[in-house]
Image (cartoon, rainbow, N blue to C red; front, side, top):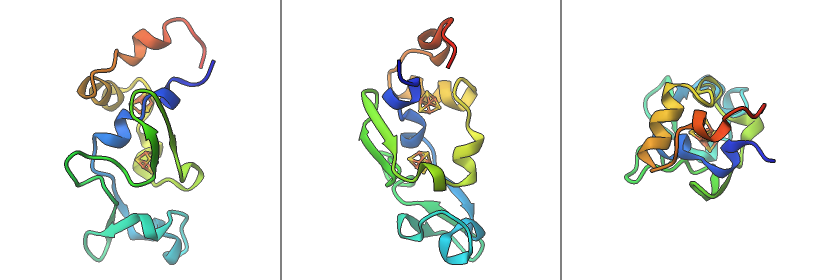
Length: 110
Ligand code: SF4
Ligand code: SF4
């Protein structure tokens, strides 16, 4: 069985994703600059995360069905920090009408 995140993606379509410009590939980091927008001299943002409806430009697929992060290995810090099952996860899932992560996972080891 695949990880529940692969049939979710709600957090990638719920929050503004801001991070340091030093994470950008053009500054020696890993995040592809082309998928970001400048906020100010020190902060940038994943493109699409300040639009309504929110949807990160790196997200592929359909939220709640089948999704993937197109830059998973190079995603910025906020994406590493949000963990499946934490408050931000559950809030995003609820926003998209998805059942709680804890309920989906149940006793499964993921
Ligand atoms: S909202 Fe939770 S379950 Fe859904 S993709 Fe994000 S971390 Fe995974
Ligand atoms: S970079 Fe990837 S993990 Fe982060 S919000 Fe965008 S699609 Fe989601």
